[in-house]
Image (cartoon, rainbow, N blue to C red):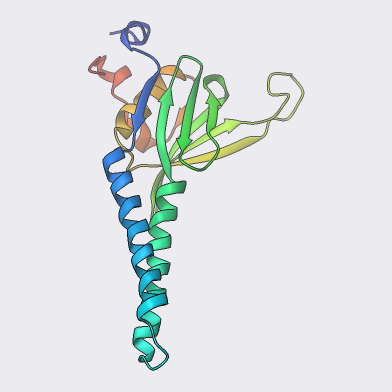
Length: 180
């Protein structure tokens, strides 16, 4: 099936959201844990307690803060519309990339697994004779429906270059599958 026919069948904008039940429960447990630790510090901790008992609440605070901050500042939603690709967070600014500005999509698999989008950010991006500036945006490979997101990026920005691994993930142009 032709890519244009697939585009017509899609209902845009499409939203891919991190499961809100997991996000909310993790944040609730994190804040509840912080409240319990502060309660223990201010009411139960005495000067004659052992060094271990004095250190454990502060280790717990560090671990709970790490969990809360990861949930508040990590990718929450990917929105695909006719004009752009948008990445939304709970407490960070939204990131919008126009389809015509995307240059390349690569995989980056080291300790953390990410996909990298290279895009133009030069203010004079469509004027000849000006040097374009490429920026990188990393998004996690463990995000919900990442295979569909990659295929939709390639569908709406067919001009982009991809590495060998990302090319092997794209099924819309190879088989004409319109299962989205």
